Length: 185
Image: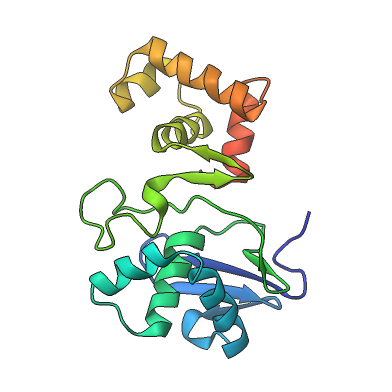
C-alpha cells in the first residue's frame, strides 16, 4: 500500500472545522497557497476533466484559477487518509469528503463539486444513504439506533447492511466497519 510519505505523493486535506485546504508532500504539511506550479498544473488537469464542477464554481462567482483549485481540492480530496491523492502526477482514486453543507441546501456549488455525496470507488458508486449507513456502522451503532437516527425502519436498516455486505463483499458488520474506517466514512 502506498502512503502519503512516499516520494512524489501528495495528500490534500481540510481541517475538520473549516474550509482551509492543506497538503502533505515530502513529509511536510503546507497550506494550499504554497502549492508548486507543477502540482497546481496537475490538479488543473484533473479539474479540467469535470467541466460541470468548473461551471458550478464560475456560477458561484469563483473565477480566480488558484481559488478554483483550492475549492476543488477541498471538496473532492478534503478527507485526510493514509493514501495519497496523487502519485507521480496521477490521481490515485476517489474519497468521500465529509461536509457540513452537504444536504443542507446551503452549498454554493449545488453539491456538484462533491458529486452530491456519492462515494466512487473502482467502478462502484455508493449512495449518500449507503455512506450514512457505513458511518453509523463505524460508530458501532446498533440496528435499532441506526434506524432511529436515520428515520428508517429496523428492517430497512438491516436490508441496507445486507446489501452493503453483498456489494462490498464484506462477511460481517465488522468488515463493513473496517471498510468505513479505511475510507474515512
